[in-house]
Length: 314
Image (cartoon, one colour):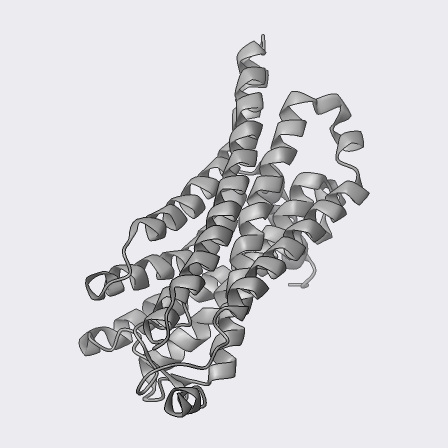
């Protein structure tokens, strides 16, 4: 028992993609490019929304928080991944690993419910357009956002507490590029049944509740769209929901994919690739999805570019 407890003071060794040494540089360049696009895109989206009073609506208020979550989430794991791809140092302290997992889990669950809140907002906007501003008051929007952060933090704290017992084996090797839950549990010597059950209950509850909110919202949206007499209103409703539906499909698709993968040696590479999609690719795609399909955002970008060009005399 003493040997196990002392092992918690030994830094975790992250394997990353060390089994593919010939791909270290190409992977670094690919991930660095994606991360740069993610940071610029998400921070740019927040700046665009704040700079244009026309975008100070509930939908863009939630979108700015989604962009903030994507920026934070990609910034928690990606720098560690980039570091272990180019330097020999592949370790992370026990405290650092637990903090990385806590904040990563908090942001993931928060984003899960932020998408559900955005679905509810879309439902109000389509089904009750004339009263949308009154129904989605600034106070209600702030409470909904605060609720998502609070729930995400509470769930993550509960899961994180189940991992705090310092009973890890040997060199504390983690077959991942970050402190992902299944990788941490795999390195543990103690019985993981309680931990697995805690994580399963919280994860399943969060996933099911968020999906039910999204499903109920879009059922109401579909019913309303079917009843619309004009083709113009139909196109506008679809245009309003298209970006959000695309984001939901990608986000929850990857989550459900990870749910279906068994935690075994044969699936370690698949879990790493899925985590890359989850932590780097999705945060990169979200601002592109919302900017390319949103006329208001594109118009704001054009105005900002023109203002920047004309502000410098020839």
